[in-house]
Amino acid sequence: SFQGNQAAVCFLEEDHERDDSWLQSLAAEFELPLTCFLIPITGSDCLHPRRFHLRWFTSKAEMDICGHGTLASAHTLFSNGLVGSSETVEFTTNSGILTAKRVDDCEAKGSFLIEVNFPVITTCEYSSNDFSMFSKALNGATIVDVRGTTKDKLGVLPSWESVKELQPIRDDILKCPGKMLVVTAAAPPGSAYDFISRVFGPKIGVDESPVCGSAHCALADYWSLKMNKCDFLGYAASPRSGTVKIHFDKKKQRVLLTGKAVTVVKGSVLADIKRKKERRRGVAINMIMKKPVNYFVVDAFTDSAFKGNPAVVCFLDGENKRDDSWLQSLAAEFNLPMTCFLTPITGSNPLYPHMDICAHATLASAHILFSNGLVGSSDIVEFATQSGILIAKRFQKKDPSWSN
Image (cartoon, rainbow, N blue to C red):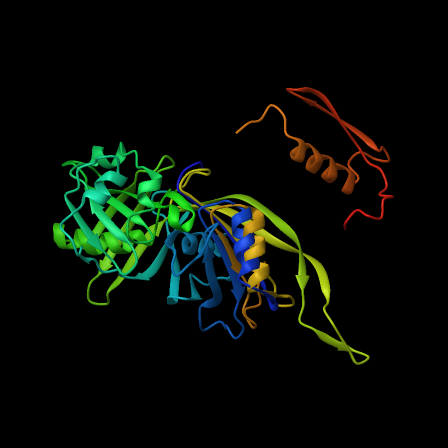
């Protein structure tokens, strides 16, 4: 616990749409590195892997691909029996079909690892020999080499220590080209690891990714050329830290990332569901429903909670569709770096810092107590806090000018 990369995994139903703004809003609310949205796909059977639509959101934007979010989603499905006895699950994503496989952990009885299959991200020479912009962003660090991918930049430093002790300047990273800046160096002789890395992405709402899975698809390509090998053990040196096992299949141009995950939080989102317009007695209406959305918060690429990279994974059932705006709104509601929404596909048969005082949290606490009958018939509740006794009182709304 308390290591690896966090992700929220959200399950969405097939027939209730959520627009992008809803999904983005929910991801922003979680304020985790990533939020995954899963929607089940109908038509899966015993002869084929269970299939789900999968989308990834940071608190600011949707991602084309995310390794730790995919691992977190697969972990949630396998851990909760949502794919039956299948050892493999398929995800349809904006980057094509991605698969995840459950693998027995030979070192821990009853435990398992997850292997996710991703396309390699090739690196190429940077268009300039002037690395001063990157060096400035990395607080004057010595840059040995800079490589580029289609969207990100990879900076190579001279030593393991230089990466680990790095103190980047956020505003200057924002000025660098590329969505994310990946920083890496080779491990010292005798280390159990092959290389070290850190990933900075303030442009996408993640100042530093605890453990970025997709970055390792580019790191595999780079280090395979430098080390003339295809199997690696990478160390993510963020404050949470994490470990990623990598196999680069050069022939198929695929990268297999293997790691563990731990479910830390599990719950439901009580969110308004706006259904498509229906005709009743010749009148078009919008149906508003309230139905719980089950969700899990998962730390990926670690076997310890509250480390690694977190993501929220939300499960939606097939009865209530979520449009993109709903999904984005819910993602914003969680206020975590990333929220994932999972919706079962028809035929899958899914089984499913410390403050001295805080007013809004006190109100929220009182709301939960009153709404769930946890204070009986009393209209007053007292809280013993570091700021003394605080009182919350329930009363009926009488002023019609108040909004709902």
